[in-house]
Amino acid sequence: MKHHSLQKQIKRHNKANFAGKKQSVFDIKLFERSVRSAEVTDFARQLATMVGAHLPLVRCLDILVQQQSNARFKNVINDVKQSVSQGDSLSNSLGKHSKIFNRLFVNIIYVGEVSGNLAELLQQLANYLEKMSELKRKLLTAFSYPTVIVFVAIGAISFLLFGILPTFSEMFEEFGANMPVATRLLLDGSSFVKDNIFFIMLGLTVCIFIIRFLGKTRKGELFFHKVQIKAPVLGTVIRKIIIARFSRTLGILLSSGISLLEALEITAVSTNNIPYRNLIVQMKQLTAKGQSIEKSIGDSKLFPPLVIQMIAVGEETAELSAMLGKTAAFYESEVDAAIETLTSIIEPVIIVVLGVVLGGTIIAIYMQIFDLMNVVH
Image (cartoon, rainbow, N blue to C red; front, side):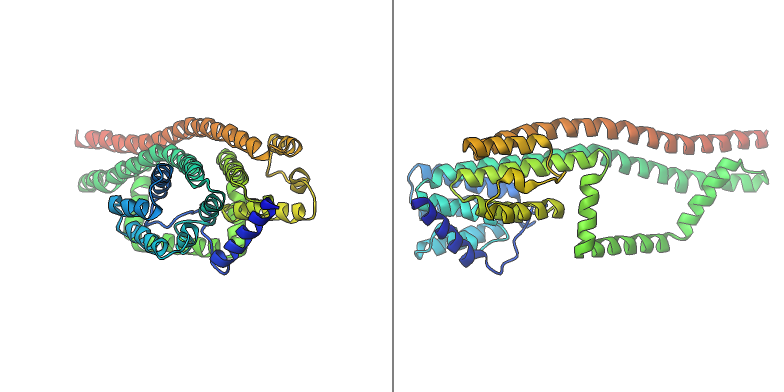
């Protein structure tokens, strides 16, 4: 009876705090750009430590306000403190800032308040947020080095084409000599870009605008999300990240005492990939009709057999949250390995391609130099 009473309270709490509000999602973004996820993680961990030390909640929030360097986040925490000091609950106070503290965050806080395990659940929440941030950081780090290489190479090639090559071309014209074919092609290409740079930039801007516009439509967003998870090599990494986050999110919600249906709903909201989000919504609907999670996944290929088997074992042994935690840990390690593999593939490919382009440009310039020396002699 106590368990069912808790679920009813959570349902009423979500209806009061999140009805009609558009929730932020995983890429999902869980938080506003002005407040970094690391700052929210630190907030949860520091609050967990102080609550565990039995400090009054208002005093905890006051300390966090004084320590916060981000002006926007400082104002948010101060507003939460004022709300709590006036008698409102912490979860309701946080729920007023749903763009920073998402539904998962607020629900876990609410369960902690009702069950009396606020410090413990805050600590679990901080660990969860750290793991999610780490996954994102690793993916960004994997692409940072290739991106730097590409920009440096573009700068070097641009200098050669627009700075060095025209100088030698002027010398050829002074001597009335014929320019090598390769050099002429490069010069014509660089001249075309230089003369039409405005139209080229305008065209690129229009293309970017069109892609962004289509990406915001329902069909366009669905198309791009399907492309993400089906892309060669990179799609594998993205699918593993989504599965790791799904497992970690659903696991921590279930371990905190939230019902399976409510946990699936929150997990769906926290997933920004539409195919996966639609599948999780379907899982919730079929589970509500009495089906197991394993059967509710059906023949979908979005979840590999290993995940389905782990879920099945968790349901059979009544240890679903523990099995989801193990699944999340496994796929987080898989993401690490996949990112290393992706990096080992991307870097040589970029180096070879840029080597060919840059090397070809340099060879074309040297051919021009040698021909010019012959003309002078």
